[in-house]
Image 1 (tube, rainbow, N blue to C red):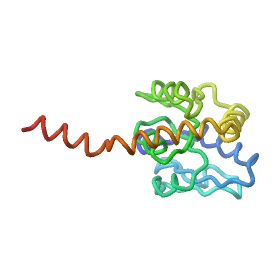
Image 2: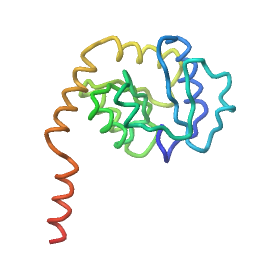
Image 3: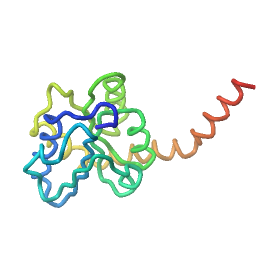
Image 4: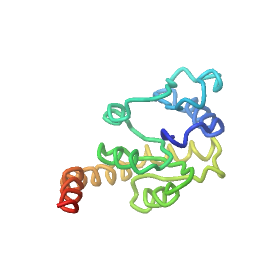
Length: 161
């Protein structure tokens, strides 16, 4: 749920409750420094809670990314072809979450509407319907072809020339 806007025990508890319904999956839940893992007990056996996670390495193996819809996480998930379920928190997150759904790379639920049951249905939809992953993989190929980091560096360099 991001490095800047994490710490919502209610959101974390909803995610943990849902994981009990997916015993064959593993969740790595990054909670930042605002929440202690012991605050979230009982923790399902298929869950690892950390303050920080190696996100890029995890995305290489992920079937799904549950995100607050921060731009960095969304672009990294897409670059790895990973579909998402977004729980937008604030700032630009609602707009990014709407784009996730619009482009068919995932679904979203407003944090005020979040329940374990609703989250579970979105996770099932996104992981069981192959079009979400196919769309995420398509955008991953677009990102790879555009060489975004190099393009951004070129634009910045030309602005200062």
